[in-house]
Length: 468
Ligand SMILES: Cc1cc2nc3c(=O)[nH]c(=O)nc-3n(C[C@H](O)[C@H](O)[C@H](O)COP(=O)(O)OP(=O)(O)OC[C@H]3O[C@@H](n4cnc5c(N)ncnc54)[C@H](O)[C@@H]3O)c2cc1C
Image (cartoon, rainbow, N blue to C red; front, side, top):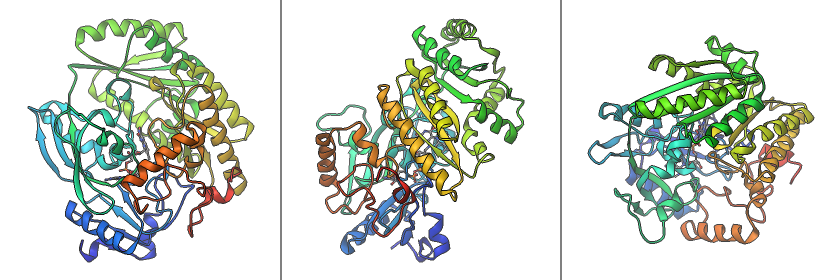
């Protein structure tokens, strides 16, 4: 169906697909299949149905919640050969793309029309539009431009029985039950998207980016909260703690200051006039919160360098420990400073190094717990600390995930935020789309047997989890 070169079944090839970016959950697929067209995807899905074989859609595998990990084995259905930009339409400000195209290459292609694709996950050089849709990805600029769901007009989808259908269309007007909205963020459990019609956004007239340091992480958190309270909605506000800044500086030698508690990046965009007044407010707030070395990027190249520091954060942390467990809790923005203090204490209690990267403007926290996977005791402490951090976020009025999804990683945490009835509704909905349960089984929605239900694939998390 797809050509023999595009079916992988030897152990070495399969092991490349044993997990996504969340490496506490590892399970080999039985087969990796790389279709190149919607018709090929449909044919593979039909065949999987005929033989009752589970199949799990996969983009670039940069997910951070184990969404693309084949925890029941079966087929890893990899969409990365589907990279065509089928239409770029500056008049309608939209593009039609195959789902395997990377996020960044869509913006790159739209640049000649002074347009861009606004959702910008830090993984955008690698992650695919299909993966972004399935996870409802966000990014630094979500603060102003919204999540992926705000930028998708329509999808071509192979349903779980292999039928090709469309959800939404080319117009933002919708009526009736919002099936498109339901599909976005469903983490590959309701079918396989193969094409997407996406909105493109005009590149703003002017962009100004600043970098500032704070003696204390909490002061940075307070500044973020105060900027929004003062009526400014920056395009992005991102914060890194000392551990992360040191790792980035060691990796990139950019001349970052490593003796401060926090580094904050603030980006303003819009008309030149509106930016001038916002700049004044931001500078005032930063001063009030003890900011030091405040520096506005002088040109596009300097701005690119500032963003490089942010977007290299997670990879730079690999210098400290071979594994990093990136959490994705959300808290109300006004409680940022308090949350930061609590997370620091949890890390100390469990004797773990926790590096912190925040989409601070959204209250979306990415504490990254650094560890060695071979150290069983350390892994247990990592999982307990992670659970405690998520519980803290929920107790503070926040939630489990800002953008990385639930996957297999937070399956057992769902009852922290959803009632049994709400979870039952979700199961019923999933059954309506995925009645045989073959499409990405074991993800997102816990069932009574979820705890340790990984069939023959032993997930490290379930083996060691204190909660199971
Ligand atoms: C360094 C780093 C930084 C990151 N930064 C961000 C960030 O700023 N914001 C953010 O939101 N995320 C971020 N992530 C997480 C990740 O990049 C996103 O979740 C991304 O959307 C995943 O895309 P992918 O192509 O890698 O998908 P995969 O990891 O391959 O898959 C993710 C999920 O999507 C499903 N899926 C994939 N393709 C399809 C399809 N065509 N149809 C149906 N389901 C499909 C899979 O089954 C799986 O459940 C980051 C990850 C890394 C490693």
